[in-house]
Image (tube, rainbow, N blue to C red; front, side, top):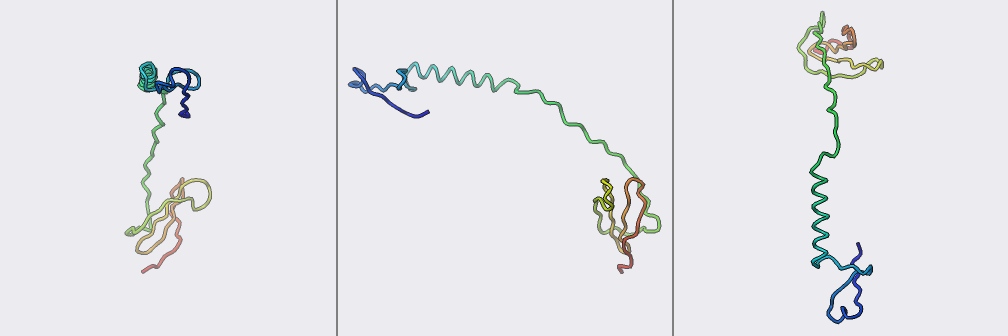
Length: 117
């Protein structure tokens, strides 16, 4: 709100400022009461529940034991990504001797590279 003070009539000689609409400005007794009532209504509205939200769904995990078969090795790095572009996350494992890709959903091992050492 723009702070505009209008001095007019008898009030001008006493220095009482009035709003252009004719109402009293804040800081006077009636202005404090209006401000206090507004603040109390705001507190009452803020204290109540604004909305009721449902909790997000809990993700479900399924454990798979993946057999490394002939590609068993000490794992030095592992990463997850869509290697073949089917939209499912595959696993790539790098180790002492092999770089192996495990295809989702059957988790069959596929050799990418070998002979690192």
